[in-house]
Image 1 (cartoon, rainbow, N blue to C red):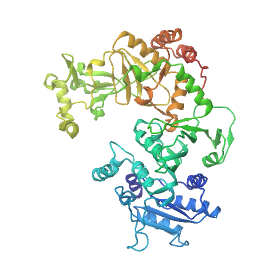
Image 2 (cartoon, one colour; image 1 turned 45 degrees about the horizontal axis):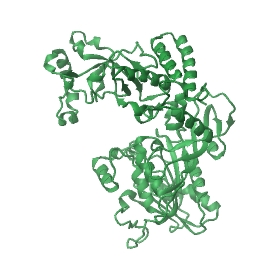
Image 3 (cartoon, rainbow, N blue to C red; image 1 turned 45 degrees about the vertical axis):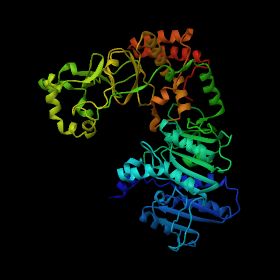
Image 4 (cartoon, rainbow, N blue to C red; image 1 turned 90 degrees about the vertical axis):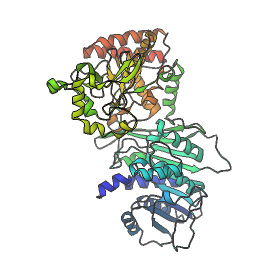
Length: 575
């Protein structure tokens, strides 16, 4: 296995020196002890984090000992060479899997430092932990390893490896000790991060959260965040404190043309204490400071807003009648698990071998969805394998469609290779997740899962929705009107601003996640208000209008109406 493959399989993402130095300085701001400090890095790699905190502790004339673990001996050899002039009792690096060494049953650990007979306890032994644990899903480690971790740490579903590391590090930290850890930022706002947020709130006084977003500080495609917390005393339990310091730093791609502060690097922005806009070379960044708000004993998303931003979002919510999730279920599109077989924009190429036309259904997908229509130049169709029989979903009888049967047989190796389809008692040629055919002919609102700008499209033509999109179906005329209202609100700059502030989930290059858990929390104005009725009427016009200039004029009117409905000023830009 080469170095690149090894890093991918283990999730190794070495910490850049500038980021390591920044984290070390941030951690030591919260150290108030004059006693000798025990510092631990449970996945130390080549020792960058330990080296950085050593420099800071030396500058502060504090006594310390450094401990590090890693599974890769070659990384440790590099780390040892960087500390070779220090006393071996001051720096102790050990090859081993920290997650295996942690004993959660009785909290008694032996790390094997020094003499083999020496019992060096790790539980509650570290005053400070500084870490950048691997960025990898537990499932990538192989089924056996994943099952072992799931059993030991009581994990369910798809879990990032940093979660068991957080549990292990917490067990290794003294009460009142400081944890400073770099992880993916996904847990900050996603539904999947709920258990992590709840765990951190229960076990730590949260001191600081720094979302580094799309700053691209790592070679790997990861959006990092820093968590700094003080381990709670088991005697005191939860605290009433519900606020902590936060910093958000993202590349600015929304056309901001105001004043910029020129700096040499992203790390200079982090060291600067001010909010504002900065440029590093040709790139522009926006830094936001504020108070992170969270609920005790809750896994609800953390709110990372400045005072001005919080006041604005609170006003929008106050003037809302409800949220999308109060009225509708947001569904995901179909999952074929063999798209090249089932989906094409050129079925005619097959000539007389083309499957029966009644099975080829128009498809809405990332590639062709637009705000007020679909791109006619991308005419995707899906070979749909399900139908309704007496109001119930059933798989088609393939013998009734000889051309489709012949086509599927020509791809039988790939289709029959989907063992999970067969083991579920399904037909080998089926679409894995077909959704309910009865809904396709109903009016529906469709939007892509990831997009730079909102693209909420209203379909009344019976199209099928691909798995890279979500959709909401209206089952009666009243719900159809409500869908049009949601479409109008969701396609505005105002709701994009709300989305960015409340869900804090930008990806690289300004792309946004439009997951179901986010859209279900979109506020909706009073449907009976004059503004809402005008919005619905205007959206109907927009859905019929094909001229871009006319659409742009109507969109300005829409922005004003939506802002009025929520009692806020019109959002002219996203800054």
